[in-house]
Image (cartoon, rainbow, N blue to C red; front, side, top):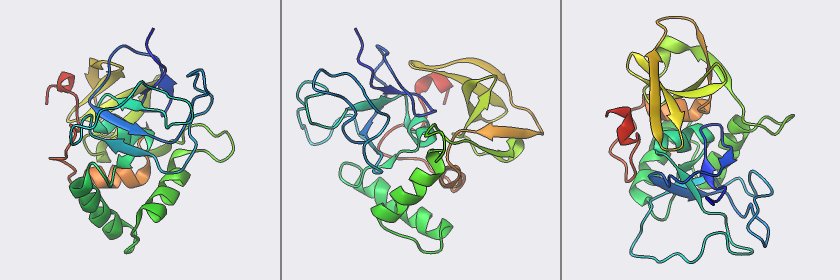
Length: 209
């Protein structure tokens, strides 16, 4: 049976057989029996390479260790509120930090980034994933929006329905109107700045890109 460690754009943890293209963590979320008991344990939510320097990972969800998470692609990780790892993706992290500093008045450092991101991704009252509103026509490719209760990827003139194994149904992207945006505001702006050519794929091949 698949482990409950696949992450949706809304930051939820679900069981699914597809592994995805991006690895990450947000602390230890499981108990000694491997059952997920919480959505996060720390503010440092990171997105990593699937492989790094030949490191061999042991069995998943070991007692007391961080919970290994998997994302379809980096657009999904961004939507959930994760940012590039400073260890296995140092060049990406440095580039991300430079963009971030430009967006936030010179703000730098993982602690400051993670603190701001945590406020953008978690509703303080419900503890659920926080959304925000924005003109649908203004959103950059790679952003996720909520349509009829489902997460859709913004890509050109289309919206692509997310699934644990990639993207399925497509619908036209509205030319006007307000969207319910899943991707945290600061990460929308990182995408707008032209996030590409990272160490992990921004979009799954099922997107057609």
